Length: 317
Image (cartoon, rainbow, N blue to C red; front, side, top):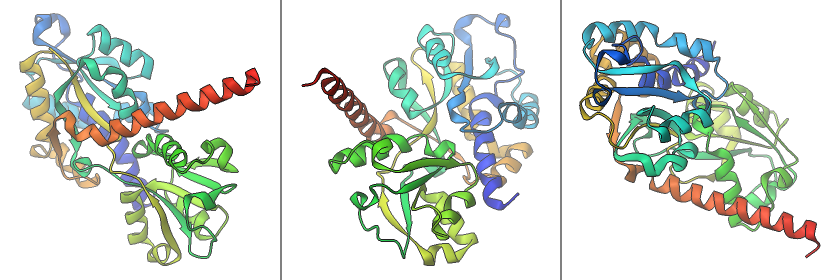
């Protein structure tokens, strides 16, 4: 496994650690009054192709060490840990999940019941993350419009959960068709090398990936940086984070946040962070999500306009 592969897998593991690992195996729900508990779950959408059983197992060592240090924390994890998106969002609205690892696409569906004062981010996402489109220097592509009929490959990774929304809003802003009509094909790969190298060898026209992944790939293979160039850059987006439901237990929430923010104070946490591409986690307010939410609102309007045009076309208007 290459260093890039290891980093990607660790990102997936870390989402489970952030939101679920600390709470697993803690005091059963019946041991305390409901108002003293924080219930935890993570969306399956945050895994982006990772094996769910591997992801569940990944945080076990950290969980065991954390519970030895913080066994009095009043938090419980959903037995399945990772829930399908619709189930998780339903449970958040029903008040049976208080702390949740979610994508920004899911957040906008429960923003009204989410506490805006407590958003936990990887430190690498503290200022947002850019998506980029990369093409070969020898290609004829110099603008988004030039990509009509091109073959695209997208990095299948939790960081890229907002890629479809960014591509659609970018195409719409240039008065271009929807992505499925504009590009000849769109495929995806889990391994970053399988995303960058096809563009390098000109087997694929354009790659969509996160800037940190691109920078890591270039660091490991400088020839990529000499032969490929960035064609387009997204706004700084926050794809995945941990949030809390309004009115959940203040004490349980504080203990859970403290455990995540102090992950490096225990040996298992230090080992995880050493492998991970971030150094720590930070606490922010929902203000950090403004650019992301604005882009997703534009995306929803794009989808509605495209749907209306399809309906008008079928009606013969």
